[in-house]
Length: 331
Image (cartoon, rainbow, N blue to C red; front, top):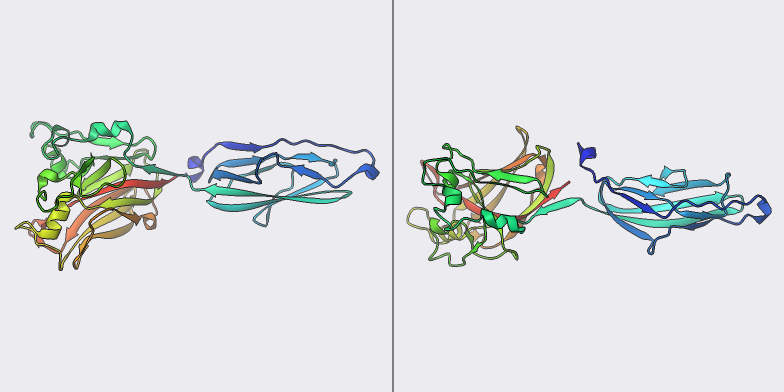
């Protein structure tokens, strides 16, 4: 599977050129030209790199030795090498003829092959409902037909649809991930379900996703990948109730907790669980924060749920919302 996901671009540096001498007395030490402006190259991991220098003063008895970080990688005039992981690779070429040995070094800088889902393309605007609560995109026609709200990103291959936990007739109220661009910092006066898609502060871009838990995201092609990180934030509604209470749910400004649990799955198999706090013992998340998801390993999906200390027979009392943005996927 990893081979299938590797980039298949080929980077060719220079071309092989030989200059032979029939008389050993005329032979000089080899001359090597990499034919690049700088003695370093930058590629993404998984890219096949072909380095074919120009040689002078070489013949059929000339020997070649390429080492990559001290390990012999080839004994031919041309090096074909595929770096599997990100990092810095020191490539040393040693060419020996009857007159002596010439050594030349090249540094290969390999970056991670990642894609970031930031919801900023124009197509995402069509998925933002209005009004925030009760709009037809997320809530349909009022219960006559199931709501069909979903999204899929062509770059990261991440996708999501509403849970349809009760048949889909109640739309977003049944759980899901909605796209939004609403910003509202008034958590004291606007801490109601009517402001469910708003966050209290911008993340430096227009759009983001809002989770009403339980919900999930998954790769549309069914392949497992590492989701390295994402930015997370409270919503205006959730933060207001968490901070001040609303007569039903208590304020968590002094004690108690509200937390998001993220479960990674590869198919039906759980790969790990990660929890981050929206509030705990008076410490409340008020803006955007980045969380590391790499410990969940290679996943085909992530599921989200919210739980807390203030509960009733129906579950946690606080609004089960949070927002995310800038999801980084390793390919």
